[in-house]
Image 1 (cartoon, one colour):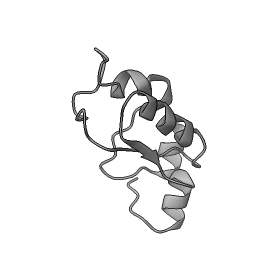
Image 2 (tube, rainbow, N blue to C red):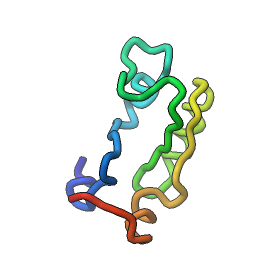
Image 3 (cartoon, rainbow, N blue to C red):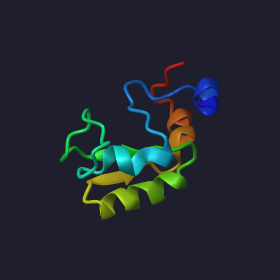
Length: 85
């Protein structure tokens, strides 16, 4: 939250904290986020692109179509892509 307050966020992104990611995106979980379709591709973006790689790999083990962004949000921002404050 502190990083998003400081740096901004990707417009329209669904923010899910890492510590609940599997619960929210596992199609078999009773706690899954209903706004994410069971077959919907998922792109994970963390701040610098390190933990998102591990998170995407974990989601693939759960049967999700998941990937991440190399360089994370900081690279997104450096490339001049949209950022909401």
